[in-house]
Image (cartoon, rainbow, N blue to C red; front, side, top):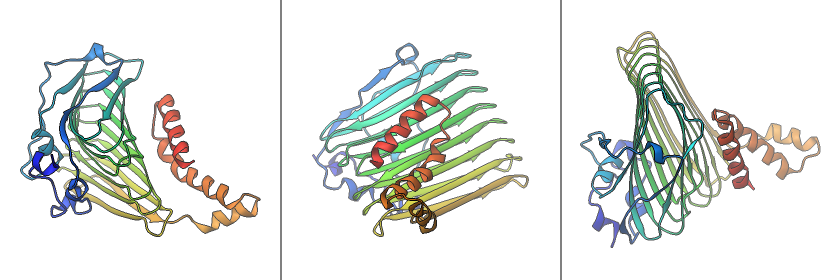
Length: 350
């Protein structure tokens, strides 16, 4: 059956938040049947908690959350107990199945003082659509490192929405590597609810052919003395298209906020396209917030310098591209995960 038979109200570019992302066009001709997510887990079984309730944010307009709520799905719920420090990463893998619309729901609760690393891997073969929603709660003085590897099939569609709350002295770190899918959109909404709560969101998107990828981030500062960081890079080849929409919202109570946002984008083809929309919305008067963005081709000056030192043009370009990508992967604080992601990056670059 067609996607329109399964889902009636898909967000369209008529909505401001979707003006760069034509999801209805991406799924218009897909013939799909409903499917339920089957997660492959390593290290997670001791922390399963089916008693946790799924509580998606309420929204009046069409969104990934409303799309997710309209479809039947089981919730994978994980609770990490108070004070527990998990010394091994939790691995969660979700594979798309050919011809299916898979709805996934993931709920993660990291209780006070707990410390955990989660590696979330998305992959699959042929044509499918994965629409996922993740609800995360980071307790007081807790820490969650959340790493996402999006390697879906180049004919697939992947849309993911993540809602995060962080309590006093808690820390949420997320890094996303995106190399797959014909159309992908990753939304993250993080709320800093207690003093000294922190959120660090970064990512690397590598696109080629006619791929499209949208990264949309909103960080809300709702308490004083909270730092946040957004650092994203996109590399575009051929006729690919990328989008970065990042926003820092500082509520009136959130004095002494320190918010930073940066989007750097490298175009390796004259037919590639990048749309960037950075935003600051500030209602407090004692804050330090900044945002910036750059989009362009490789700088010819260092390219000429490297070639003058004996490198071929191909090797010089490769070196400059790896240098461009390297500082964002440095945001990954887990050494093993960083080495794995950098290896995947080098493999993609060839």
